[in-house]
Structure formats: C-alpha cells, structure tokens
Image: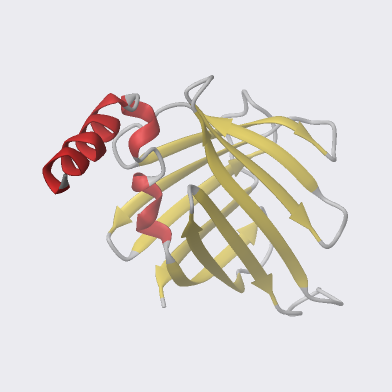
Length: 161
C-alpha cells in the first residue's frame, strides 16, 4: 500500500507540465529585506527599503521611501508577481499610495537580467524596467519612460539587508 502511494505521488509529480513545477523558483533570490538607493534623473539619491516574500507561487513586494529631500510625505507601494502558465510570462501588478499603478509582464529570464514592460499603467505612457542581479546580495535597475527609450529616467541599486 505504501509503495503504491509513493508511485502515485511520483506519477503526479512527473506528469505535471514542466512550467508548472516551480516557475517562481528564480524569484526566491529576492526573498527577504533590501536597502536601496534610488534616483530620478537630475535628483539626489533617496533611501528606500524593499521587502519580498514568496508563498504559493506568488511573490509580494513592499517598497517604502520615507520623506526626504523635496518629499513632503512617505511613498509606499505594493506589488505582486506570479507566473501565467497559459502565456508563459511572468505578470506583475504594482500599486502605489500616490494612485500610481501598473501591470507589467516579462518572458523568460535572460541570464541574470529581467526585462519588464508595462501592458497598462496609470500614466497612459507605457514604460519598461531592466533589472540586473549583479551578485547574490545586490541588484540594480533602470526604468525607461517609454517602451522604446534608450535613456533611463529612474534608477536604483538594492543590497540585501
């Protein structure tokens, strides 16, 4: 009986589509807390924190930027990322406390680089972001104001806290 159960579990595991087994495994890299420095073009760098968690195939992210420089109030955003097995794409939703939001997607990872592109957002101008994992404890990102821009308008670097 025990042997039949083991074979049944093994058969179910092996029959699952390859993409359905652990599509979010690559994102385990982010789990935990990060200290970040971010800046818009022409602005002074600002401190931020990001906290990532993964549970049941969903990665959640919370970003906090305390008031500093010209900021009058704190900025906070939440994001959720998952894998869409039907389209073979990663999908992310973003919602900030300044009524900013976006829906972005990405195909397969390209080495240690992620290429995210908006499909919809609150500004009506679709943008893109490139994230590069520079080490096990650091990632950098560049955001571009349009899908075809070659000059970034926002950048940051995060280090595992």
